[in-house]
Image 1 (cartoon, rainbow, N blue to C red):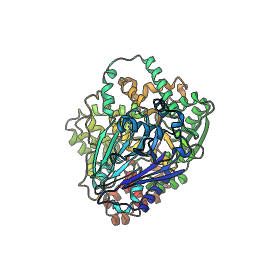
Image 2 (tube, helix red, strand yellow):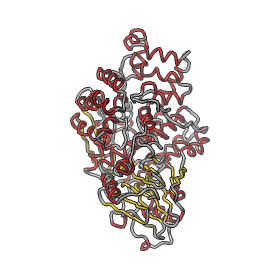
Image 3 (cartoon, rainbow, N blue to C red):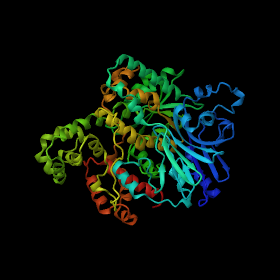
Image 4 (spheres, rainbow, N blue to C red):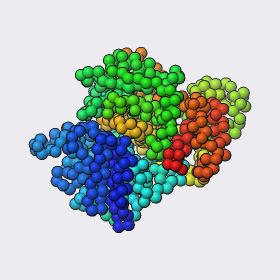
Length: 639
């Protein structure tokens, strides 16, 4: 895994050599092993290397194609590079400079062009390729956005980087906050491509190619679309399946996907939570390995959040070399103060704390770790995938629902507790033990929805439009900007499509990339293999709901008693921490004096919310965390 940076200077935009070096220094954690800079005319490509495949100098970047036309700086791994290399059968071994996937990808690009090469590549990547003949620069990002890539086009030039920290190092860019993107963050909890927290700085969307040409023109187009996969598999989803055959096929696909991701010239391990997805990945790898693989688990002192014992049982059954740590509040405190620096944009996902800690733990032993991410989004694993449609069917039949929702929101929680106590069952399912009043306050804004998709989006909102913590909230934006493709059929299809398009790249993959790379650890995600994605979208909804088919595949490797239990997730006891050991840290970030000085958040609204939150039971950890992560981000930049 690596970090990339580069610039194409224009007639009205120039960059000093010191800017390039400072930008690469900001990416050192992504590539501590080596660095390289290539310059020619007005073009500079930079690279920070974390050596994974071909540790020799033959794998150094930036790298030239054998024909001399193309130069690449690339972050990622192409898992099928050996098969792709075999396609160049006319070449002798001596005609290859080394054994890296970078060289294979570059020769593929030189032979077929960028788009055709990427369609053949099975991997994760963010790359830039300079065409010396046509004087154009091409940027590209992998299908789901496992690897990040930002760019900005000042004047008639272009600057790109793996992380915003590298762009921040280029002072001549004069970066400033984007009010619209920030408003979107407080709605979603993350910055969704193409937005970034800065004006005129864009995330390249997953599965897309951007091309800069002389004169400053930047064109963007997709080389892969999730909607195309969904449409191609629509007929399969409507047809009955031979379930035993499907289980066999998925088991084989997982086996192949994990085998591809085990290729490395450095030690490899597995994140193991004891849940279905990570257990399946660990089991698939262990059955292929010649010795016990290394698995890593993080637990919490609070037994309500601690799954370490489950992971330990799975590891014992599989026979892995298992390493476990328990997070104390003191250890968490050491991390939260670094989150603003670690994440180049605010991210409202408190599981970023344990994700970093397990990455740092794993990095002491391995350089690459495989994870089970993606299984919930592909195979309907979240409780909301079943609960949201069920709740929508109830709410859509409530007469004058928007007015009823407004009335519930305006009624004090104790009054609702006393008058609507018969809804305790609903509260227990949705409110995690909170009172009826607090639960109804949580869901009442959703009652203005006109269809399931809008209902789902409203249920995911961090801060509703009419309660934004921003001082100037006129830039509030809808939660998302796309409509579902016609080929999306069932309720489950709709919610899985939405999560895969937005939540997976915007939250989950961003969290994993930044946390792991902060520890200089490469992560690989087998369940996002293109063949598994295609297979998942060919299944009828019953086989995907609640990860039904994944459980049946896992049952071939583990006794069901080891994994059949309610989903727990990877979140820490954040409310208890924020009301206890992390309270001083949070109070400092949210002090009225600081909020007034910054002039970005509505001090009165945020202070009133924080007071209510400290009293407990608000069901609004996500609101508290979103504000704290924004404040921590500002604090890390001295703002």
